[in-house]
Structures are given as structure tokens and as C-alpha cells.
Image: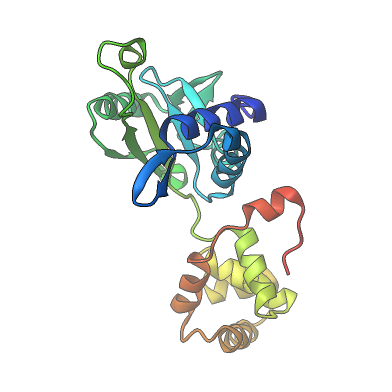
Length: 244
């Protein structure tokens, strides 16, 4: 699954996107980007896509995967309602196959769809977005192959663990307060946190009060909202960079 699109193929795809679509403003007139800079720009584009905290896939009309970013490679594990079989995208549950293919067919007609796949804890929303190309000539081989479709995977958890940890460091939370914050962001109630931590509920409430004081949050809901709106830190985890 992780070898669907290697680094060279990712850069080739990004280079194609740049050469076909990227435009720069030049005195109010749009002009194509200088091809000599395409290689470096394609690397930036590939890395940028890998830094986005949403799984993203490009597929063709036959549900063949053309590109998958880092978050999608991480998300499409054995519990996800979407699965990758070789280069093909499939729904894990038989009852999700028809909605998936209907949405992909609709994308070929230029229609956007929002899918809800899976059930229970594995339930996930998927945005299906057509990406029409203005450069494809009607009747050409590219037109016959169908247009590319973008799939954006909904998150299965509200707050990414690394973002929570980075936020905890940035506001000088203690390790224990950081763990309490992680649990709050996972929807765990203070009473359950106390049970898991083996402490009294009053201790947890004191810790929450300290966290709120350091973050300026007026309530637990506001505290969780602050963390949920943080930019992603997935790149720091992959590259081994420290979070200051």
C-alpha cells in the first residue's frame, strides 16, 4: 500500500501538474511558469501535499490510484472503509461499493459528492471532487480516459496526537497536564480520566483548571476548540524534528 506512488512518481505527477496548470501573475497577465524551475517546484508541491493533515488521493475514471499523500497512506489502514488493492481503490464493505462508484461516475460529469462510508467507530466521510482540465481536447486520448478525481478523507479523530503534544509544549504544560489534555481532546470525561490516571476526580479538575489558566480557555469546550484548530505537525513527526 505504501508503494503505490513512490517519490519519483510523485515528483513526476507534481511536475505534470505544474507544467500543465501552474500560472504566475506577470503585470496582470497570466503566463506559464518557467519549465526550468519545474523540478524544484514539483518537489515543493509534493512536500506541501504531504504536510496537509487530510488524506488525499487522485484517482482516474476506473478508480485506479494516481497519487496518494502521506496522510492518506497513514489513514488507509485495515480499519478504514476504503482499501487499496494494488493500484485500485475499493470499499471495504460490499454495501459501500455502489455509493463509491456512483460518486466517481458523478465526478466524471463534473458533480461533487460527499460520501459517508463504514459504520461505528470506522465511519468516515469522504469528499469526492472532480478536477477537470482545461487543456484536454475533446475526442483526445486524455479525454477518453476520463478526468482525474480528488478524494479527501475525513478525519477519524478531532485532534492529532502530535498537534496536542506540540501545543502542550508551547504553553508549558506539565507531562501530566499534557496527558489530560490529550484525553479531553479524545472526548474522555474528567471522571473517566481520573479512573485511567488512578487519581481523584478533584485532582483532574485541578489539572484542568491549570491547563485552562495556561491556555486562556474559558471552558473545556473552548480548550478542545483551540487544539482542533491547530495546524498539523505530521511533518515534524516523520522527519524527526523536535517541536519547540
